[in-house]
Length: 138
Image (tube, rainbow, N blue to C red; front, side, top):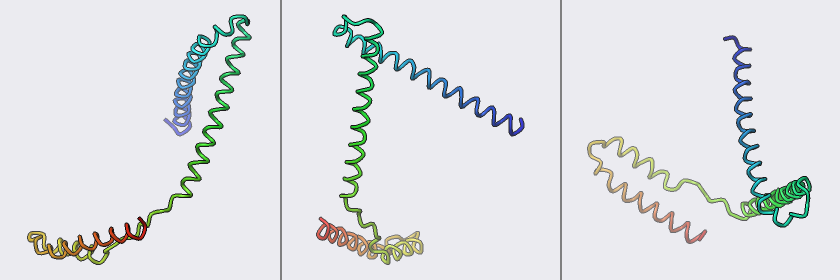
């Protein structure tokens, strides 16, 4: 299969996929329309079928407008909230001890207890860093 045939085949598959999606959407919206008509039709029994249909379509448009407005408000508030939240300080702590303990474990693979004092010091350093973070940034 040459490049053009492969490209055409890929586009054909994409079109088939889109068509399946469009059919599913068409079915979904038809079902939604039937549900809306069932809910609204008792109130619209004095109107002709085309008028009722247009009223339902208008209602869908109003709901869509409401959805778009709410979506925009949500995104605006999310943006404001993100701006208000302070970025966390992600700088490393106890770097020297961390590298020392890693080297100790590499050098003492069979005798890791040789690194226990260093590990204890490292854990104390981490604990102190946590306390400092809580005290200064609460």
